[in-house]
Length: 486
Image (cartoon, rainbow, N blue to C red; front, side, top):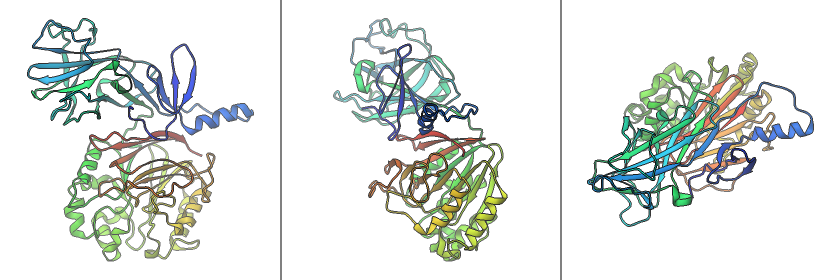
């Protein structure tokens, strides 16, 4: 089946024939993500308790299928291949595949668009070079398309499929080509004689897809990019996640265990520095337990300096004025800073900071999760979480478990609470290693993934937050949604 973001519910809308809710998309429908707040809105209307407020539009996820697709071949310049069950791409003889989509129903700016195709299962369908994607002219039909009348390819390449394997899905970012509603057409070409074959639009569940996400535009000044458990000199996956930062503007929230194994000055200089260290100037770090394998986390505090807070504390706060958000960074290594209990130095500082910064929207992050299905919970952090909950904080970001997990808003005692609850994310996917096996799934866990490196992108505007998990290249897992501040 086509990749579906786990734990997501979709609103399926067929123009002129009504609306329905389903757990997964169906071909031919326009599919729009439903946030948990939509359900709360419906209940409020039915109960007659809805108080008017300006409308909040959560981000939308749309899946479009081709209206036309086919390929052309230089070896048969006047032949039409619409009756063939595949799309072919090759360099010798030249074979170019074309796909055309009708994009409709977009109400907000396009944030991301991806062209997803499935490699066929016919013999020799895979290739060492899957092809380069470009925009093409739109005035063609699959029933009359030939090499002689083929539409021109337009502009610079949008992206490329690398090595492709039979019976596998692949994505390419095509956001630059999907600006708004309208007709969009793509051509896939290759200079390699080792060609590839993809399923076409008649292939049912493996038909090509154009995945479009719309929502709140991020300017960099209101974007937070978060992950922990990041760098090691014996891995290259930290470089893969660093490349996400290379293309994404925003503040980097580094969620602890930033370099392995012991957070020494040499490891920060030689292992973290060449990857995530490229973005040191815009990084707001949190300290992890591996940093303390060097006495007093001296490598960490020496590398980041004043940006990491006082070396005997490791907590601080800052504002993102463009979004109207207050951000709090805490030290979850309780034994290193006098505890995390009520009345501890850190808890007293937190209470004072919350009182001095009564922003409508507040986000906090530290290293260890308070909730985790990866057997990584730290109960000693509950007093800090309680203080955040009492102050109506919206979001808590954590790492430590080398996995991605998103929770529904909840109380400190694990009660689902869409009104005042804190939504926790575990984003231990920064590059060091992954833990694919989860333990017992704990209450309110909404989505989990232990096989994909990536970065969580949060767009923060007044009264609203939007999230999207950005996977490394050639990975397809993602998770996205939106919520409102308390």
